Length: 199
Image (tube, rainbow, N blue to C red; front, side):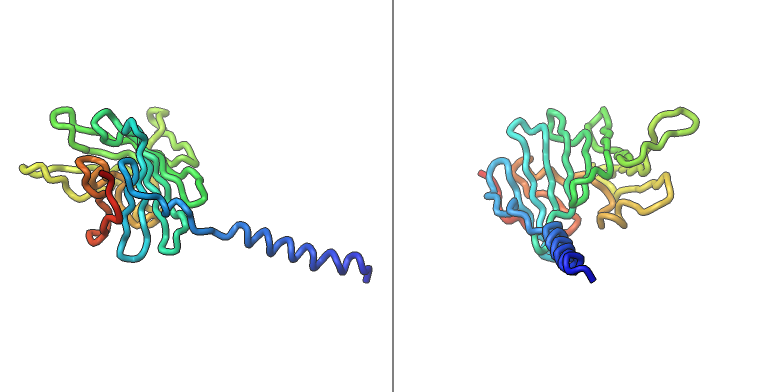
């Protein structure tokens, strides 16, 4: 066997191992962020954490979900209206690949959230009757006489995995805005607790 060829194989293997090691998910340093007026950190029972950041003008809210070992698993960027309610968001996976786009609809009479429409960002799906882009999922809400919002009513319009199967939650809507009235952010885990709050 050619000695040069013998040397190239271990070198290639070493290069492959090093490149694989570089692609391994590293814990994020973002979790070292100090809670302040534009940062909130929520710690969950399973050790995972959610980092919320907002722009000073309250028009963009970023939600980053980290695993227990500090690896980014999901990123959601919300566009907010003048009342700090989300009007749309983009959902990315931990590798920063855009998965879904979501729009939110509110009732004109009282401003309550009534519907979310989730669109697949990787494949544009068109309604054959209208030619318009169609959502892959609709999430609707109703309210009782006291104004309490119902659990999400989910309509999956195309076959495949639901948002709940992929992300473990039924809806991308914020339970509460973590920056409104200084309240901690709501999560799908009722036992979640805030790590810090801004003043």
